[in-house]
Image (cartoon, rainbow, N blue to C red):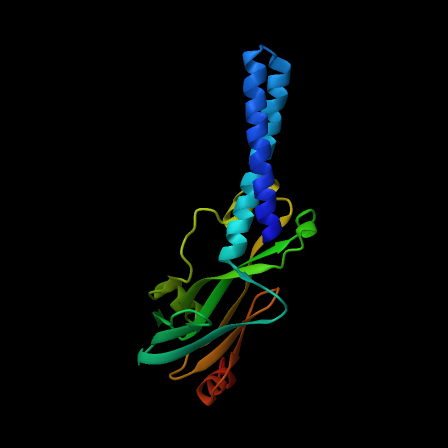
Length: 218
């Protein structure tokens, strides 16, 4: 993180240097040198902007080291094919969501690093993205009401979104959806959520969840 902030500062100073250099050469009517300064300033500004975006995203996402505990989710049935999910994420306030169907699915955004970004020594980062209800039967998926909830607030500077939209401009960033986990919903079922480098894992915690998984698909 400190390295990213340092790089952002250095590139910002370089951008200012090239800007003043371009202005000086332009006043002295040196178009070639002014053009070179403009090119250098543009490159520095782009690199600085990328460093700032990486720094903000690295701070806003959770670091992913091996298998990491995320939290728990508990379900309470309120009607047939209708549940209230209580999401208990570590170090955050519990959130309640209404889900329709008989299965639940959670997605996460994952950012890993490739050369040359690996030279920065950054850990992979992730953010929970959405929680949705599912139906076991395809015909129900097509015809019945669906439910989906966002689990993260939109941010202006998001390296995941930028890398997905402009992959050629972020060659060292691999932005993808972690393997989504989906399991059955049942009254009073509790699942533990962990995150790995490939995606989310959900494990039953209590008897209600264990029985639901055991009877799933039968």
